[in-house]
Amino acid sequence: MVISIDAAFSLPCAGRRVMWLTRGLMIALLAAATGCAPGLQSQAAGTPAAALLQGGFATVLSAGPGSGPHGSAIAMDREYVLTSAHLLRAGERSLWLRRPDGMMAHAQVVALGAGLDLLVLRTEVDFLSAPKFAHRAPLAGEAVWALGAPGIGPSLSVGRVDWAQVVLEGSGPGFVAQMPALMGYSGGPVVNADGAVLGLTTAMLRTGTAVTLGHATGIDLDGLTQGQTRRVFALSAESALAEARRLTAAAAQAIERHVSAGAALRDPRAPG
Image (cartoon, rainbow, N blue to C red; front, side, top):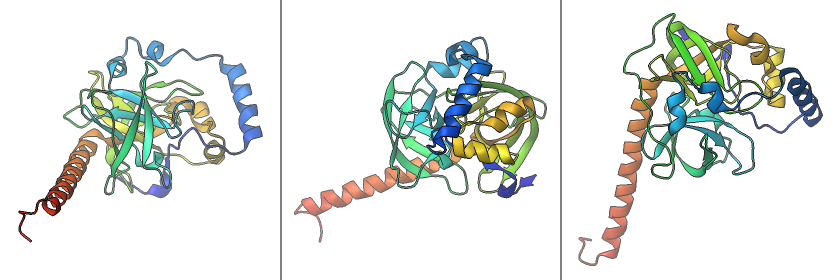
C-alpha cells in the first residue's frame, strides 16, 4: 500500500512558540481536566517499552537545557542516534538529547536519510545504548507500544498494527498502527511484545482543524480527542537501520579522505 504525503501530517515538534495566549489558555484547561500525568518511568513500568528507558531512549531538544521537548530518539549503537528528519529546523547543525534520568548530551547532525524521514545524529560514546531491534516485519493485529517525549498527555501509547506494510510518500516504508501517539513521539520507538523496536513514530494519518491548531500551539488536541482511533505511521526499523549504516559509513569514509588529504599536504615526502 502506498499513501500520498498529502494524506498524512508529520508529528511536529512540541516546542513551537506561536499563539501564546491561546496556547497558555489551553494548557491551563487541559491541566485542570487531566491532572498531572505520571512520569515516563511509571507509565512504562511493567510494559515491553520499559527496557528502552535504561539507555536506548532519549527526548530531543533544540535549544539545550531548560527548553521543552522537541521530539524523541533511539540509539542505533554506542554513539549514533536515530530520529525523524522533520524535527530538524532550518539551519540547525546540532540538537540536544535528554535521557529519562535527566542527563543531557549534545548531538551533531550526521546526515538525513535519502527518501526517508530519518535523521542520524552523533553523540557522546555510551551516552545511550542500542536497544533490541526486531528482525521481522510487524504482523497485522500485533500489539505495539510507543514512547514519546513528556508533555501534555501520556508519554506511552499502546495500540495494534492496522496495516503491516505501507509506503508513505516522502517518509519511506513502514506500517500503520492505531494508537494514541501524540506530538513529541516523532522519532521515538514503537516496540512489540518482546520489547524489540519495530519502527520509529513518524506521521499521523489524519488532517483537520485540530491538527492545524496543534501545529500552531504545540498542543495535540486532535490526538487527545481521537485517542485509540488515531492512525500513526511508523518508519520501518529495518529500513531506518540500513539507511543509517549507509550514511554513517559514507561519513566515516569522507572523514578518512579528508584526514588523508591533510596528512599528504603536510608530509614533504608525499608524491606531488
